[in-house]
Amino acid sequence: MDNNNRTILAVALIVLLWSGYSLFFAPQPPPPQPAAESAVQTEQRAEPPTAATETPVAAPAIVAKTPVPDDYQEQIVTVESDLYQIQLSTTGAALRAVELKQYRASNAADAQAYVYKEFGVDRHASYITTGSEGLAIPADLPFKLISPAATTVQLDTDDKVISFSAITASGLTVVKNYTFYANRYQIDINVQLINNSELVNRGVVNLSLISEIGESEDQGMQDMYTFYGPLSFDGEELLEDSLEDLEKSAKIYGKNILWSGFVAKYFLNILSPLEAAKQVQVQKGDDYVENRFVSPLITLEPGQKQNFDYVSFLGPKDFDLLEGVGYQFERAKDFGFFRILAQPLLHVLKFFYGFLGNYGMAIILLTVCIKLIFWPLTQKSYKSMKGMQTLQPEMQKLREKYGHDKQRLNQEMMAFYKDNKVNPLGGCLPMLIQIPVFFALYQVLLGAIELRHAPFMLWITDLSIKDPYYITPLIMGVTMFLQQKMTPSNMDPTQQKIMLMMPVVFTFLFLNFPSGLVIYWLVNNLLTILQQYLIRRQPD
Image 1 (cartoon, rainbow, N blue to C red):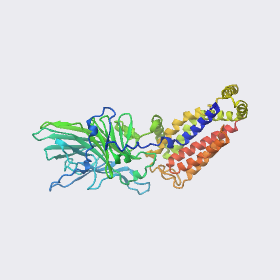
Image 2: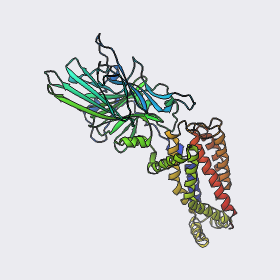
Image 3: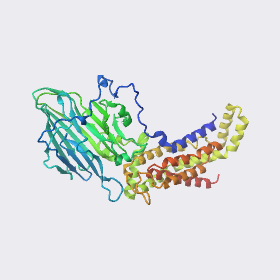
Image 4: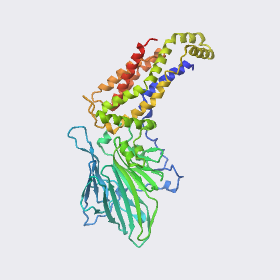
């Protein structure tokens, strides 16, 4: 392949990458497990496999039931702040419902607050504590509310602790403390075990996050580019478990896991054990997923106490809020390969919104700023391509003269480039430098909760969903076509016709993209057309 063909190929690949990033970098589900594998797959990232890898995962905690005393009456404790309303049940001292007050179920003017979790009375609950062997704790253990006395707790400026207590059939006292914060979506969970029997008790203790997979507004917002399901983090890598794979087998991760939970496009519930869990088991039931944190083997002497502490985040997938909690929770906001660029771009976008009050206008302003920063590089790129296009007749003569001798043709081409002071890659490299920034902004806009139900103008009332009339994607396709027609090209006529099909392909691709992302791409195209027009008006 001669240098000119390599240049053509490089340009074509850059255009394909620039326009079709979603096709190449969209999150992919893990590969299916071979049928011959065990029903449980163990992933040990920080330690070698042990005998536990062949032990089947225990039955889901939520199915463990015990007889309820005749005098037991379930109580619901409501915790309310400006951010949320949370309901806890004395049955299992577990979470029953979460309503997020800062978010609405829709963008209608009279929309109610968004109900993130709502478990039925006789169905699932979350933050379930269970145990096994000598530390057996049934999932539906009846607790008593010991603090505060009232079943309604209002969070103003002070943090509040809600405490429950229960005694198992073996004489094990279980105290469960929830700490709620008035201005954060953080929930601290403390479980105390006290051996009040005269026997030595051994076993493991579990805390489980339960996430229902039924239809919900947040699930309805999912798309093929956003991961939905259980997510864990080992300090280096995000570990996604697709619901399809969990149908075949559960997953077991070792004690290197920093946190685990369940994420959707805009909301998530993740939890970190402050003392390393021996295992994190991720398994799927009929309509729920369980992330179970399993303690190491515990031995309790008579009268001995043991504490287990956890930190949880339950709310919006907002980078700043997650980062404020710590424990690397912000990594749940996955910006992909260009995370180092995406985070600053998100902060700038929110800064612009702070004084514009409209995320659509903030996207436009950010796109303009990025274009201005790269204007000199783009200018150099287009000038280089324009110069190469001017030299095409002379280059064609060289091909015709030395086409039978590839080595001589390459030598003559290099000498021709040198004499005319042109670089065949001069049109590609400046564009290549810009690609990471554009891809990073793409990732920011694709799943930004800031755009959820955020209006722009006219018919675009929600920047997080597609244009209902497909007007902006169609205009974007037209501008992409004009941009390609105006871009100097060294391709042969057949290659040019193929590239002119790109606007059609990506117009269809953008039809279902969030409006905010389409606006970004449309404005960038318009600015590129303006720049190309100005370059064309300049004398050669």
